[in-house]
Length: 280
Image (tube, rainbow, N blue to C red):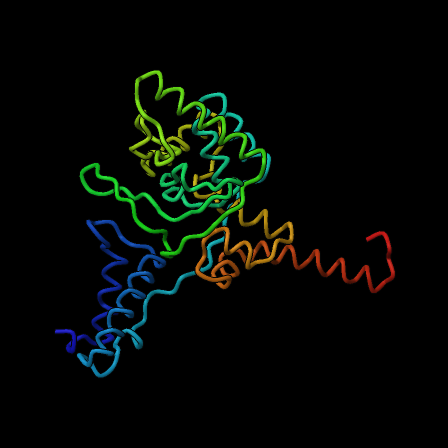
């Protein structure tokens, strides 16, 4: 029963997840923290319902999570990857460019339909595609269960227009109907079936292997987006909004290193101002 759960039981459970994990694969400290957060919320609900008198998760001790230093690809590397993709597969190049300018998660990119763009090509990110069991695809809400609108630059809009032209041409050639409900990145000619997120990841890895680029993951394009914006002085709240973070505190926590470099630049600027250096 729920009332019998003690903090020590949870600590034993967390230790087991670290050692044995799920299906024989141990979980990282970060993953165990996610499990702990879920259990804490569930037990809080049990507390509200009067099933328990205290929440044992509050006194449990999940493993400590050390700060992971992100290895973010530079502009030259990202440009090389996208240009190389353009030679191999223009559809995938469009996917990667959109990833790099929006910071959207791979599942969110796979879920984009043409109807999600308004007349000015601003993109509403509302859904995400996840891989289900037995080759099933599931369309659900975003990670934070909230939609967001992202403005797209003119050059990326042009790539999207070319992407739409390619999709429509392929559909017409096969007698298929293409519409605004079609997925932008689809594995079927009528655009009804979206790309699988994990296949996009595999395609990115193969592309990087062929190009000779190591240590860069598809998800790193999201980190690239964030760090480039922060380094350019874009307000943290704006960055958080484009990335789909629940709040700016998440952005501050994940990308603290980018803010540290910006802080050094700010210190230099302020010092120059106080020294009367008009050239800075």
